[in-house]
Length: 336
Image 1 (tube, rainbow, N blue to C red):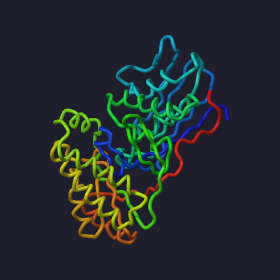
Image 2 (cartoon, rainbow, N blue to C red):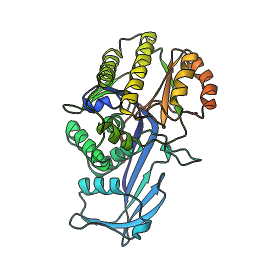
Image 3 (cartoon, rainbow, N blue to C red):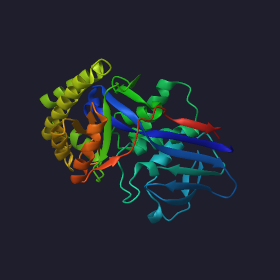
């Protein structure tokens, strides 16, 4: 093909929310909702950026290393393309030339409302676009570069766990400090899970700002970090029943942590879902920043998760038919 096509998956953070920023280990897995990027050489006076997803439309631009971006769109009609501009300016090695660029993140939003699910669309797009623009030589340095780019576009926030998951796919354990460290692991046999969407989008950046502005590491912070580290250390060795008990304890610790820092992790119906899950003999927890977006229910029996869907609907939650994605970023074609 005359150009390059790259896709990268979304993510679900299973444990390590917030505390991964301070050096605790986290667990995350990729899901089969993918951001795609296509870049093709073309002719004409301007390059074109075609967006499909949260932003829809076609936007003409020119770019060169000396002068940066020049958009041929009225400023009041130009969406926030900070992520795109940052990645392109950092990694694009072509000073001139005309291309068609297509960014597609439709997999990450509800087709009816257009609201985001909270599956890591910006991280998936960062990995896909970066992979389309250059070929990495060193995996460790590449991961650091991607994390730094993403943090720059997120106000300096983020641990990089979503970037690492999108890049490598499958399930990973992740540590942000003293340097980003990734280990591929496996989902244990005998443990089933189901994802549920609250119907409300949450702002991760707002919650991270609130957390950063909070008090110094509290007892609940240390307890949550210890709980996450323990789950990661024993993930492959726990029997499903013991693992579910550990995840239930982690969820309880997450609630105390959220209360201490005023984060509202269990808002938007997550609190009710935790209680309803316990009544069904299963474990449920919000994922990521919480206060909306998604949560995960886990059980030894897939049948018990299916029966839980009715209870979830009563709280306004929608079952998401997604699966773990074992492949990370995938590239077809040749870099320009």
